Image 1 (cartoon, rainbow, N blue to C red):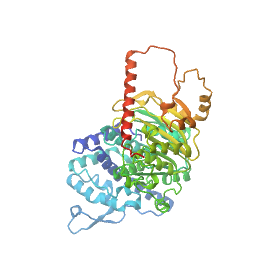
Image 2: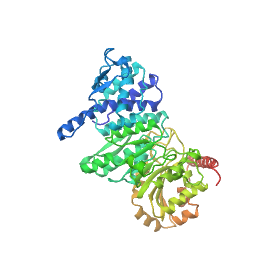
Image 3: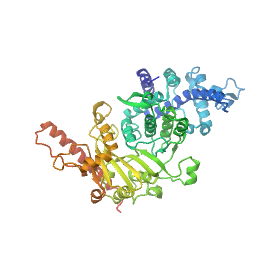
Image 4: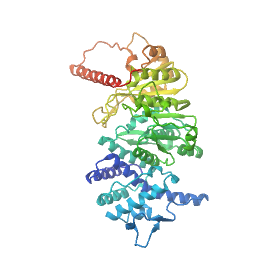
Length: 541
């Protein structure tokens, strides 16, 4: 069953009902919905595990077997009863039978503690500190009814994931989760650039809602799908191709589900949302840990206990928090770069150090990272260029992270080890959505697909670049710069610094077009001024 307009309408109805019922925080609402979706679906998963155990003669004990010690006497059938059957924790038991105050009391005092208690042993660490926040009897009763109407047991993992993405998108529209949620079409473009393969480990050190890990999962599945194992799906007004992974064998599927994807986040709500997002996609065994990688470090024993790769990750994909500062005393030695406390620099240093041999990284950075003049900025870029292979810098359109951030950003793609010989610069004027304050209306203009194709053909494009006629205008939205040219510019990786001048035939533009260009130039200048102002906060080295 695909994610239908009717399902979309029901999700919007839940959101509107929560908002109208006195629950205006979209982040908390998404977290609460994730718990309710989980309670609904774990019953079906448990039943499927029981059927599988019988078919394969493998031992499995239902999570609903045995008795549960009642936490709140109000939930007991009589004053002498201290326990109830754990089967009462099934959604089908309370979700269809209770309402009003009785529903709130049972879910709050029995269902949530039940799942928190069984926790890690069933891969549900995200439930450890979960609490019911929707405590209005009328609102909770209505939300439970609407979740029932979604009929999630009929949906496949992709449909469930699309449904949850729609929930997260509502948060973005409300302007509450912008710093955590990267537009999904931008994520897919970055994943296409880095191109993770089956058998490689994939890591996001600032996972947010796990958008990069989900996109990497879909990318690998698509790459391992036959022509008959593909379909066109729609998300956020745009079509994209999705694969079923029908060419993967059982061993590869097992590795994909349990030993491929890894992530951290500092916010426990993000850990819950990310874990639910992955679980809905059929990845319940992926653990997202609550951890700040800039203030904590792991030794080999710590990694082994957490089942993490000991020698680094093959692929790192991230849009880490930027424009922030950390207390210098809290920063672990592993990530220090000069005297900087800027999170955007510290995260890149961390990613460089946590790539496996030959590993590759795709990371969103504010443009100040590419041309900043502090000692830490220059040293980081020198390390990238001289000790790693910077493959490409993709300049994203201004406004791509609206409505919650107007910071101009780029995507940095690099590989661990070696030395950079030349860098390919890619410039996108449009990303397929109207570049206004909302950035949600689909448009036809989209430079990203062609730029990704150019990047994939970068070896041949380098030959084209070197053989170009210097007297003819360069009209492509990609170009190169040699390592020597970049070193001469204090290791600047700003795409505009190396863009070839285009000498077009003389023409007379319309005055309004010239004014629009001037307006955009002024915006860019103001962004540079803001970046330089922020750099003044950096300690003098």
